[in-house]
Length: 433
Image (tube, rainbow, N blue to C red; front, side, top):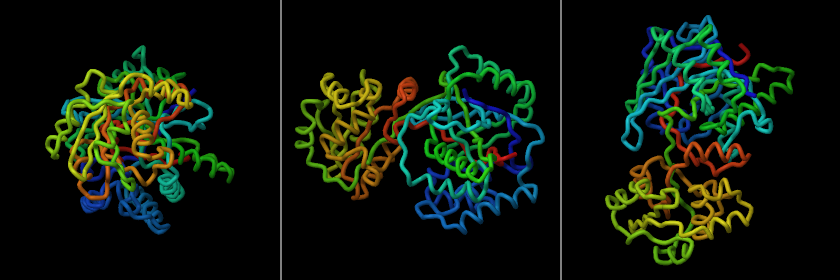
């Protein structure tokens, strides 16, 4: 099973304000956000984790500068490696997209990489080739883990949570805090010695599930294999963040789809194509404000996983539709879809709405779908004249993620949105230490 251990993390010197040097994950930053963070501090994490401006292809010189900066910060004492191996407890107090306040607890550790075929670390989403090359080039340049892959673990008996709480309370005096751009509080506490050992012991023999970071996990495997081919086993580990599936602060939100490059018919024809598998709920509404109110009500329905919102930007029209009966799901199973995935909202959306009604093959949709985390962001993006349809859905549950992964199956890319994101810069890990 999974081999998780403490490690000697590399962290910012105690007198450096973490607010100035941490950053959101590289793949959620806009160009303006990245530039603001670069200007905030010469030691901000984006200088090493984001070699090029978002949307531009990094060059070898960009990766070289990132690696040089990471080495310089250590030489200057800006970054200091902890003397003792530790786990790093992370409490994130946040307000979710649904307006509710929560605290999610997890910890950062070092994981010995296991190939996906070994079924030690289980994925639940498909990946695309494009995003992997950038992270591979960064690995080659820095030979370090600059951010964490987000993993889930079962804790049905509460043993891991109990051990983590006891160890965290004992080490609370060493806490450091940072706030992200959304105002969420991130609190890190290093846990060493017997406390760390008790957490690792409680976690032993439990499977791990990738929540966020499928591309980075696969890239870490590729880099490991590349180094092994050169008789170097220093890249056999990966820095990960682990969170209990039972944690009360763990939430999953939907990722909405914005379709482009595809001609979408007028609403009446679209509804004809969707029938008889789908039936409209109420009447269409027009205008952005009315559409937002309708789309934000998806989760209020008794069967939210069967209700979808469709927004046609060319005439600002929105309609909610509901899956009618089980015939369509049985058709998906007969076509080779498993019972585990057939009933997922994201599967129904991709297979029955986007494929059958819109004509977009989900397996060849790269470049035809953009993503939005919230209804307001999606509606704003749909005004650009490029997109022809907004497709809105409810969230995939943690239980569904586990069932799909246990069955050895995968969902479409970006089927889950775990919030808040993990900040880059709380702790780094040098490979081979």
